[in-house]
Length: 88
Image 1: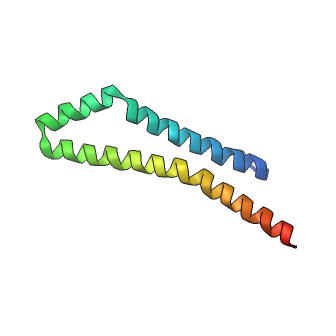
Image 2: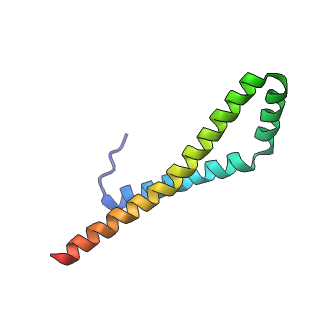
């Protein structure tokens, strides 16, 4: 496994990873087959269906929070670093 040493490459990688998280979230949200599967399981087994709904919802929330927070944090750190550099 190659070690990424360039700072710009690491930052770009975080932004790409964030976009991938948002894409997976969008795919899960727009998936008719997943919603059909969840409805089918929930109608047969209420307890298992509820558990799958809960895991599906938590996964979607985690993807959305991760996809939004990563670029915000990276941008914030870059702005703080730039501001510190200008103040000296």
